[in-house]
Image (tube, rainbow, N blue to C red):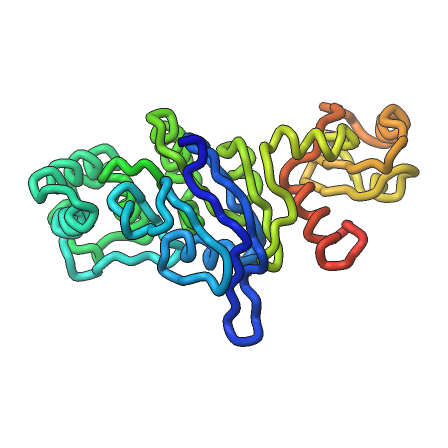
Length: 306
């Protein structure tokens, strides 16, 4: 199987709002695939149609070679954006239940749950109720419930929401580890930096439509090497007004500068040297974040500078 999930012309309308509008893409088996877009772009609705929680108005979904997600449900792990834990249940009972509904034997589910709780530093809490845990700890339990059956396909909807930086790194390492074992992962987020670190291929959607789709390397190549990354000491506010500059994404002491076609990178450097202390200057492909900002602006009828 070369394709884990295939969507063909999916649409979904709620009243007068079309949440998904003719969406088509394939998720390669064994990949970490980013389903990207701003809040309200249609990501969660798309995932719910993949999972057969919602039925599309038109179009088809094929998942792990089947047209019926329920037929392969024991091979799928799902971490929804809205958490679904039972607050009055103890952690061990919660995970035993989660494993059993994925076809695991009770003893296997209890054993796997205990191993994962220990690994994610929750072993001391195994007899506590879910409601006694912090939000971050509950997120870990929800993640365990999604992966404890060793799924062939793992769908993560905004998995880093509410997580502190340390636990975000823990989750990233786990995602990469699971992928190395052959698990296909669909990673839905509006945080482009996370997607750029984890994903090899993406579908970028806006207003329920695919804006970009394909390997990240090819997408970046398409947008060319018209971007300058600059790190400096001083006030870089003047960079926006330099000739040939289309857009500047400012950081505290850094800037990502998108240049017009044919603009001279060296002219930017010369102008900056005269007014800033330069610590780093490089010509690079644009980041996924800047590509997203540009494409969403164009999609909304703007000039790409949103």
